[in-house]
Length: 370
Ligand code: GTP
Ligand code: MG
Image (cartoon, rainbow, N blue to C red; front, side, top):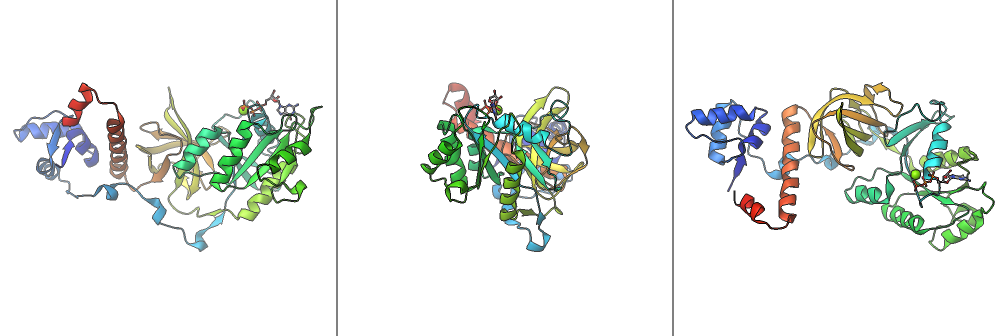
């Protein structure tokens, strides 16, 4: 039977729940906001409020952006998105910090710049690279499983004094499964026990043939600590990016992916997103997973407010009504009613999943009967 709660209907109509309850009272059928009404009653209410009843199939409610493909002539080069992976303590964070210090724009390495889970560096030649702050293998796999494969290039960090370790191998497998090209950064070459050649040989056993061994996977010896050969690593990234010919249409409504999200006491829900195509603007009305809102402000990885964010640009977005999850897609919609509708629909799908997978107890058996 087709039913809907008063609350849900109010949300979709963009009206206040209390007003619907009042109206129902006038119609002589008092209900509470959490109660369910049937389709005929819902239609009556919709008319009463001067809205139009549009029957929608569930598939119509949600947004499927995969269908609109950008025409070739709209595509423009975009920066590569690079994820750094590797075993615990092999120097991922140190390497990221060192690279960030080499950023010719920010210069002031350390402290000042804030952490937003993703950042962009400008290289000497003016090209840009976006780095995802090591999301961990689980996050990488989870995002990939949800179709949110945002990584263009993986940099595999292997400590030259330690060689391949379980998480290195895991990272190799994830990268292969994702079909993402890899660059090997052999780190800690300053250490007395460093043996880069041994790393290359161990990689062979996992069918990774680096250039130094006659293969086509770029390998670069670095020291994050001594800041040795960071340029070499960045050049390797640049070269790989050129081969990939990464492009996106910057002149359309934005689509982005959530890299991380949290609730900030003062500022409310915050989502760090990576724009994949289009340009995100302050004032845009957005749906992000089951959350919706209006972009109130955007902050870049240097803590500066920005009005626009184009392809491969990571920004922190303020203005959502709820905290989304990593991997959720951000879509720009035409108006707030539409945003609420999509978000409410997605929330109801999530709720349904939760009820069906929850263990049966007296309480939720009762809830299911309602
Ligand atoms: P997790 O985030 O815990 O997985 O570690 P990580 O891979 O981010 O390693 P991190 O950058 O925290 O470095 C681990 C340790 O290795 C630290 O004590 C670093 O100072 C040290 N280290 C990192 N890079 C180098 C290097 O090039 N040379 C030397 N000698 N030490 C390094
Ligand atoms: Mg780390």
